[in-house]
Amino acid sequence: MIAKDLITEEIPPLKHTDTGEVALRWMEEFKVSHLPVLKNGNFVGVVSETDIFDRLDVEETLDKLFEHLPRPYVLENAHIYEVLYTVATQKITVVPVLAADETYLGCTSIHHLMQLIANTGSIKEQGGIIVLEVNRHDYSLAQIAQIVESNGAKILSTYITSSPDSTKIDVTIKINQVELDRIIRTFERYEYKINASFQKSLFAEDMQLRYEALMNYLNL
Image (cartoon, rainbow, N blue to C red):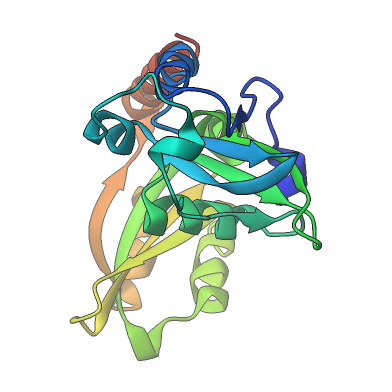
C-alpha cells in the first residue's frame, strides 16, 4: 500500500483562518492530537493540541497564534512503511499526504493505519508465532523460510526488532500453523535461540479476542 491509498476522507484539514478553539473541537471529534492546516488551499503545516493549549487565547485564528508550523508529510507514492516511520519519528497522529508538487491531497491517521494493518490477511489469519534471536550477521530469511517450509508450513508475515547497541536481532515470524512444536525443534537443531512462541488454540482464541477489542476501540 502507498500513501495515496491510505487517505481517509473522515478528517478534513483546518484553514489558517480557523481559531484554536475550532481546531481543538475538531481534534476531539476526530480523536486525533494533530490536524493539517491549509492557507488558500496550500499545505502550511500541522498544528498540535499541545501547541494550541500553550497559547493564551485559543479564540485567535491559527495564523495569528502561529507564525510557523512544523511541516511533516509524505508524498503520495510513499510506501506504508515510510508513513509509519513518519508517524513514529515525528510523533504525530495525522500524516498529510502531498503530491510531487506539494499539492495537498488529504491525510491519514494512526487509527486508520492501525485499522488497515489489523485487517490484513496475515494479522487476521489463524496461526502461530515464533520469536527467534539471531546474530545480525547470521540473519537469513531464506534459511528461516526453508526451515518452516520443510515442516509443511508457510510464513504469513515477519518483522525484525533490534537495539542499536546490540549485535542481536529478534525475528518474529507468523506461521500458518498453530501447532509449532515440530518447527521449534527444527530451529533448535539449527541452533536458533527461541525467545518466545505462541501457539495452539488458546493462543488463537486470545488473538481473536485482542483483535476484536482493537477493532472496537478503533470504532469508538
